[in-house]
Image (cartoon, rainbow, N blue to C red; front, side, top):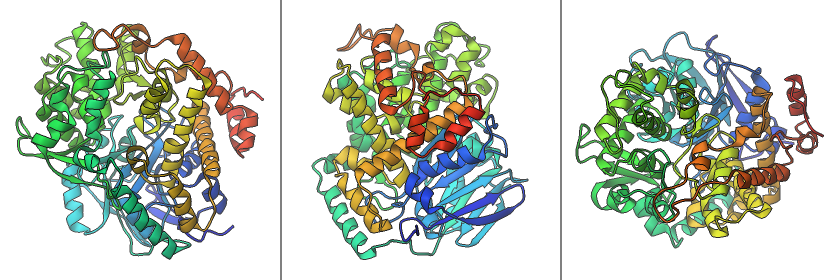
Length: 623
């Protein structure tokens, strides 16, 4: 099989220890069976890491991966997957980021970059077509992600730039990779992996044409697709509020995370709503390359220590730094958001850690002395910022906070672990699931931990009925995972045209045919998605040979403490119902009752090498 378009067919390898690079051919079989992005990253991590590899060691791989649709003139195609073994969870970790770097990587002639080793000094990796080199970054080390972006933009006009902030340098376990003032990816600590390799930034600039098998057809399909996006019924409202509309939607549905996910409604929700943002704070908006439904709502801070500064906001940031901390003042939400972006740490995880610390302090589990006199309380934006500064500097108790909620809670004891809101070590993003067993299951089975990118089943479940407990509900969840976490993370392109505006999935069959020359039907794409999910699950199990179904459970809080206010007061998750849904999930996936893929399932997807690897790790596999 020969690659004729969509993929460039080339993999760039960078060895920081040796200061060398090489280019390899991309296997056409791997391209067709795993598509790109997450699929490529999972295969590399499986093949090249020994079980038990320290995520912050030189041996870990830092991967930047595109897919066959990345960078082409199609709606919202400017996406890049960043991946590594996660220092936060110890399992497979990735994220996607909308950035010029995605387009420039394809233009430079590479489908993906694989980085190993550790540079002897702080460095910038520069990729300009065939010219690949390391440049010193001593003058950039310690600077904020925002400052580095500006410096490198001036030095390399038109380039795609990926960078870390001080959070990545200090190996904060939920440090992210950032780009273009507010774009970020890699919640499971991919920014810390980059920092562990002494890489402050990656600069990518290409001059080549991205290959396409049927270029004229692709351009016409792209033109039609952009018109279809623009003509969607929800387009005008989306352009006003983007994902910030979700604050009001979650409040109405009783799923807005409040006070560390104690409740699903927040009295002060209007202060952090999309409408308040639109009327009082929004000054501009921006999007990723090749996007005409831009989601970046740029806001100006009207009060506090960052007065007059601007920051990009979306729903998850607003909820986790707003209602989940009891904050109803948009100025403090924006301030915390900008602080996280400057430091290069994940806003969702930071909000979760701050909420956990506030609750633990409230319960007397953390003393005043440990917090250097800071007395956190719900709604106190100034105290939250001071806690965030401790965290970002790893100062005093901030060193424990920088390890993430799971490890922090473990250090405080069993009672604290009951309100530590994470799955597999990744902090839960902004949807309360006291009344949503399907959404809780989506979080529980997400391939990187509790992240909405892979788990946004909430709208589907509300339509089907919260109370419905059936195999059909689980089949719908897996269908959603195949599309969101499978196809879009491998293609690599943005899911928002489909999920928010109803952009028809049939477009993507046409796009893939025009880009690659190959016929991919949705049955094929869903099978690829299932192959990727099995490979990722195999990686997790190899790292945890004693794996059992408890790994796929959400936090105790949702099972043990019912909501006390709002339309669903008195309700909580039922363990028996969740367990039944989880068993359905394993049945549909072809996994055993522990949540481990069966031999027959792995063979069916051509993953015989996963069988060998798991058995070598001492994992007992079911037939």
